[in-house]
Image 1 (cartoon, rainbow, N blue to C red):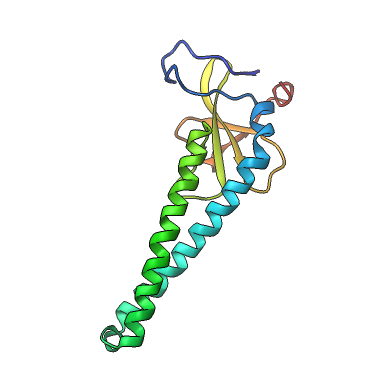
Image 2: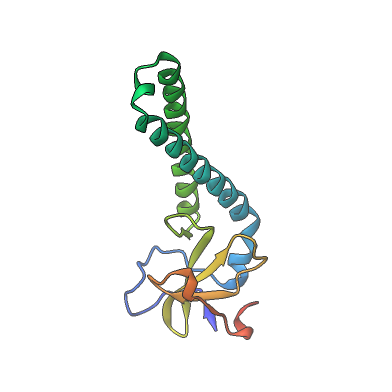
Length: 152
């Protein structure tokens, strides 16, 4: 059973927010909105970085005024998008959850399962929190929660 109780093994700091699957699932409407925004920003940032790299590789464009203006516009948008992405990540962290970095659409929720500190795991597109993994493991190795603990 997953419980929102602190562990005695010292693996979680005393101020850590602990989640049950039900409590984590209740937060999903807000988390989905933040994560969709973060994923959109992350994709935009990657596209902008690729554009800048492509333009920078072309020696003849570096000194051309119109290209310089375009690159400056892209750099300004890139800086703004990176700041907004940082805000999304900080907002998720303030809510007590841990987005997987680099962003892949997965969020971890600190929890205790069978008296061990673990992470409940949710990925964008899922309707509820039904998986877990050990601390430090990637979401690709997550396991289904025991059935009786999903609604606890």
